[in-house]
Structures are given as structure tokens and as C-alpha cells.
Amino acid sequence: MSKTSTKGIWKVISASSMGTMIEWYDFYIFGSLAVVISTKFFPSDNPTAAFLSTLATFAAGFVVRPFGALFFGRLGDIIGRKYTFMATLLLMGGSTFLIGCIPSYETIGFLAPLLVLILRLLQGLALGGEYGGAATYVAEHAPTGQKGYWTSWIQTTATVGLFISLMVILATKNVLSAEDFDTWGWRVPFWVSIVMVGVSYLIRKNMDESPEFAKAKKEGTTSTNPLKESFGNRYNLKFVLLALFGATMGQGVVWYTGQFYAMSFMKTVMNVDSSQVDSLLGIALLLGTPFFIFFGWLSDKVGRKYIMMGGMLLAILFYRPIYKMMYTTTDVNYKTEIVEKRLEKTETNQNNDLITTISKTYTDETSYVEKKITFNDKKEPQSHVSITINSSDEWTLILLVFIQVLFVTMVYGPIAAFLVEMFPTKIRYTSMSLPYHVGNGIFGGLLPAISTYFVTHAKNSGKSDFYLDGLWYPIVIASVCFVIGMIYIDNKNKTNHI
Image (tube, rainbow, N blue to C red):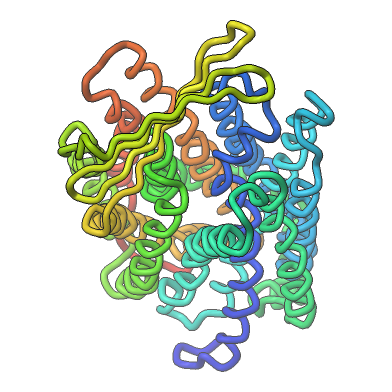
């Protein structure tokens, strides 16, 4: 494609972005519903263990992403970009739909979490092949010198997919009663995906192969063994490792801290009402998404390195102050209760368990509901707290999450172009997919489970600032990546290194 021509690129962008967005929607609907899912597919006698098990299952999808990158990356470099990421779309859509069909733990016992895990692994394999294909496909259509701008549209799809998953959940909750949503309505967002996948498949079916790959195939210069050429070649392997430890590892933890851990933290550590969290996170994501495009465009002008490294450095310096402010904003210990409005109700359920509900109201219009269950069969008592915050606190949290999303856009906006430019056409799909999915799938994907475990352990140990312990994981990983990236990454944008 010529330096100035953008003919047809919007068709490429829309087709690629829509499919990738739907795959992210499918992948993240599980995380968005983690709190509900933990009560459906896992034993209910220990809510904390059930939630951690859900996060571990969520993380399992990330762990297998590198294997999907290897499998589908190899196919993409041999048979082409188009057909490979059509296959990943169908695999992802089918797996997501089936998760919504699995009977609960109460119905089929341990078979429920096992089936969820299997389908979650298939989702991870599909996503492992999708992103590299979409980013490579768009980059190979982009005009020279504009890869950062055009590939940044693909970078928005992960956030947009998460945003749409939150909106579908909120819409379902608004249409159904709380009881219906808890009973069966939570399955609807999983079922909806099959329609979206069908539409995207029809659009992708009419796409052409990327010009760079088509040219390489015509000239007979495509790779016959992409895995060997990507990782058996010491020179190329050096760039694969640099991409991982100098860029995608840090980008992965910043991405998942700013979006998924922020959501999990507000719901499970701050105990903010789940629907409120979904709403405020959705607003923060909506406000932040255009900055993916901005930083992708800027990276074409000033280079990728300093924008990505700057995002990591800001995250390292400001995560703890941001999360401390988030926690104290809604901490009822800093609020004044209207004592005369306190209500306490005690009742028993059909199992003769004693249920005590305590409702409190505060002068700033914050409301607090705590439900304690003392079990008749001598199991450990359970306590669940839900805090509904006022509009002022909501906007404070929106701002604090938005700042984190800005860090995300800095590290994530330029990364696709950065990775594409590191590797030659014939092994690009394979070479870029592995470091991306190890950095995001393993280092990033394990973050919610690891950080939640750190917080839980610190709380049980009696630490006063227990809620900050989960941040050590992203801070340490991002710091290591920042140092390596600053020393070894070149700030020059290039076509590829060979």
C-alpha cells in the first residue's frame, strides 16, 4: 500500500475490529460475572474459596493463550491471516455459548466446574490465535508510517469488549428481577454472544487476504516451519524475549490492573454494589477509549518506546496512592451514620439457618447492608456486605479508574505496531503472538487471582492497609519490564528487523 493511500482500510479495520471486539466480549463476560459465577459452578459453603476458584478458572483461560498463539500463529503464517482468525472466532463463540448452558453445581456437582474449565481453556486457545491475526492483518494493510494509528483501532477492541459485556449485564439486570437474574438471567450475556459471532463471521467471510502475506505467498517466501524459524533462530528469539520482558509483560499487568483488578477490587474489597461498579467502570472505559487511538497516532510521530515506558512508570508511581484513595472514598469508618435509621432483621430460612440483615444509612447518603448467615449445621458463619455509594463518591471512583485507563492506553495503544515491526512477514503472526500472549495471558491474566490472594492473606494477618498488598504484583512486574525496556528497546519505528 502506498504511503498516503488508505483506500479500503476502514473496511479492514471494521471487519477486524468487530470480530476481535466480540472475542474479547466473550472472553471477558466470564470475568464480569465472576462474583455470580462463583455461586453457580462452585461449592457454596466457602464463598471466599469459591470466588478464588472462579478467578483461578478465569486465569486458566489466560494461561493457555500462549499455546493458542503457537498453534494458530503457525497456521496463520502457513495458510494465511484471514482463515485462521475466522476459525478462532467460531471456537470462541461456541465455547462462550456453551458456558451459559452448563447446569449449576447443585445439579451436576463437580462436573460443573470441570466443564467450565474445559470451555474456558478453549476460549483461551481461541483468543491466543485471534489477536495476533487481527493486529498483523491490519498492520499489513496500513500505509507506511501509520501503523501505530491504524493498529490502535484494534487496541480499542479489548476495552470496548469489556464495556459491552458490562452494558449487556446491566441491561439484563434492568429487564429481569434480581431473583430471575440470579436464577437464570446471568446466562443471557453468554447466549447473546452466539448472535454477535454469527454476524461477525459473515463479515469476515468476505474479507481478502492481507497484501503483504498474499505477495509473500505468490513469491514463495512464506515459512514452511514458522515455529522453528521464530524460536529456533537465535537472532529472532532475542527479539521475542525482548518483546516479552521489555514490553508485553509490563503492558499486561498495567492493562489488567487498570480494568479487571479495579473492578474486582471495588466489588470484593471495597464491597461496592455490583451494578454501581459496572456502571462507573463503563463510564471510565468510555472516556478512556479514545486515548488508545491518540497514543497509537502519537507513537507514529515520536516513537513507541517512551510512550509505553511512560505508562508503566506512571502506573508504578501512582497505583498505591490511587487505590488508597479509592478505598478510603467508600470506607464507612470515615462516614457518619444516622443511628435512628439503622434497621436489624432476623429470620430463618428453610434449612433453619439464622439470617441477620443489618441496614445502615449515612449522612452523605451512602447506604450499607450486611447479611450474616449462621448455619444450622455448624458450618463457619458467612457475612456479605454491599455498599451503595452516593453520586459524589461515584464520580471520584470514575476519575480514579479513568486515570488507570489512561496508563493502559499509553502502554497498550502502541504495542501492536511495536510488535508487528519487530518481525518479518513470513513469521510475524507466530513471533508476535507468543510474547504478547505470555505477557498478557500469564503475567496479566494471573493478576486478579494473585492480587486477590495477597489482599485476603494480608487481611487475615490483620494488616491495616491490607487492601494495598495486591498491588505489589503489578508494581514489581512493571518495574522489571520498565528497566529492561528502557535499556534495550530502540525508539525507532521500523518496518521489521530483518
